[in-house]
Amino acid sequence: GHIGYYLAPSFRGKGLGVKLLEMAVIKASKIIPEDEIYLRVEKSNAPSLKCMLKIGGYIHHEDEEHYYVRIKKLSKEDMYGRDQEQA
Image 1 (cartoon, rainbow, N blue to C red):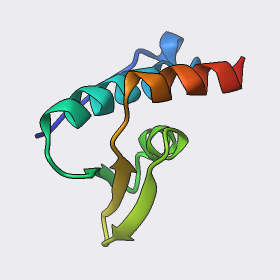
Image 2 (cartoon, one colour):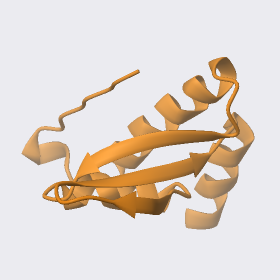
Image 3 (cartoon, helix red, strand yellow):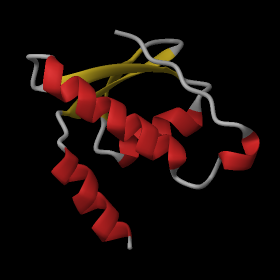
């Protein structure tokens, strides 16, 4: 699948991108059979890469234009646990 997202400048820097991506990964974790979610992000999109890494992703490999990130499946409990750590 493919997702794209955009946050208006007034909403950036508040952790909303992380929450949105985290919710999407939780939803995908329920419907795909693989142990990890595979993501691709353009190298010029540092904020999205930062969101991916913040929820547990790691750069698996890269090419000239993209980073290929893997994230272990997440559950709601993972999300709530991360909220408690940040509080």
